[in-house]
Length: 435
Image (cartoon, rainbow, N blue to C red):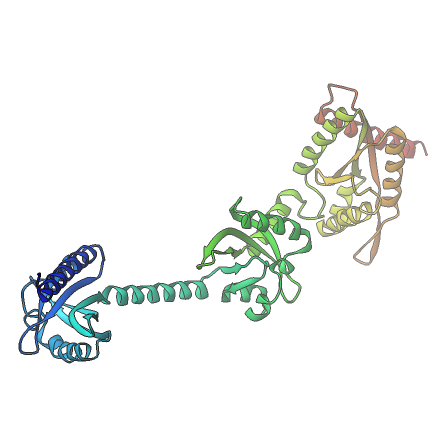
C-alpha cells in the first residue's frame, strides 16, 4: 500500500514546479522587472528566478543569490522589514525608493506579492516598476504644456480654440486685445457674433467645412468688429484639432491684424485710380472702363455714349487769378457733376482742364439731354476767388457708339467726342463774333 505522506510530498513538488514554470513564462513577457524569492536562513531570502528586465536594471546576476547581496545596501535596509511584514501577514506591500547603478539614480517602486499555501508564505514575487522614466516624462510633459501656454498667451497674433457649439473654449491675450473685450466675455458668445455682418455667412460656411474635416483655410481676409464698433481687418487661418480621450474636436483660429495694410492698400488704390486734385477717376480708370463699356455694348447689342468736357477760357483763369483759383474751379465742376451723372456713369479727369464721362445704355437722345444738363450745371457755378465770383463755362462733345458695330475702338470714340467738343466750341466762338 502506497505511503500517503509520500504522495502528498510528490504532489506538492509537482505543484511548485508547475507554478514556477508558469511564473517564469509570465515574467519575461512583462516590461516591469520581476524576481521570485524563497525564504533562506538568517531572515534572508534567496532569488530563485528573475526576468531580463530586473537583471538589466540592477546589472547583476540574481538567480541563486541572497537578496541582501543583490540589492544596494541602502535599499536592502528598507526592503528587509517589508519582507518580514509580508511574510508575517501574507499581505501585499509596496515600497518606493531609489538607488544608483552605473552612476545613474533610478526611482523605483517595489511591490511584494506573497505566494501562500495553507496560510503560509511559500515564496514572494517582487515586481520592480521603474519610475524614473515616468517622472521624466511627466516633467517633459509639464515643460511642454508650459511652453505651449507661454506661446499661446504671448503670441503676437490672435489664437482661439472653438468648440462644436462655435464658442471659444480658449482665447489668448492678443485676440482679446484686438477685439478689446475680456476673455471671459469672448468665451460666452458665438465667435460668429464678432464677424462683420457682410462677412459672417462666409465665416460660418468656412467654419462648418473645417469641423467636417473637409477644408483648412490659410490667410483668408475677413472683418472683425471690436467693442467700439470699429472694423478690424484680419488674415484668418482655420484648421481642425482633436484632443482628449473623448476625441473632442476644436477649430483652431489664428488671426493677424492687417488693418494698417488694408488701409495702405486702399490708399495706394486711390492714388492709382483717382485724380489727386479733384477726386474724379483718372485716365487709367477711364480707358479701362471705356473698354468694358464697349464690350458690354457689343455683347448685349446696346448703345452708349462718351461726353468730352473742356473748360472754356480756363487758361485765362489761371493767368489772371492764379493756379489755386483754377484748382478751385476744377473741384467745383467735379462736385457739381457728381449730382448730375447717374451712379453707373463714369466721370474722369483726362487732362489739365478736360473731363470725360462714359454713359452706358444711352442712346443719342439721352446722351444729348445729359450733355445739356452737364452744361447747365457748370454754367450755374459761381466759384469764389479773391472776393470775386467766377463764372464757369464748358464745351461738351457727344459721341454715341453702337454695340452692333464690330469695329468699335476706344481711342476712336474718344477722338470723335473730342472733335465734337471742338466743333461746338468753334460754333460758339463764331456766334459771339457775329454778335
